[in-house]
Length: 60
Image 1 (cartoon, rainbow, N blue to C red):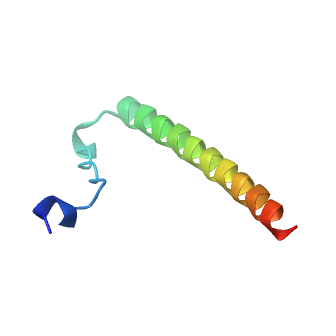
Image 2 (image 1 turned 180 degrees about the horizontal axis):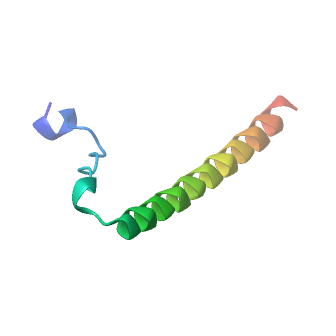
């Protein structure tokens, strides 16, 4: 087994140093993260819908 097989496929991003950010920059950062969360939630919902549809096909 190669060493890279043991490493996680996705590496976590290094956290930003929030202490050095201005209030405006922090608010913008929060807005960006909230937008990304909504995008991820929409993708989850889409995948659940596809899974449910596929399960219905195989049930009948």
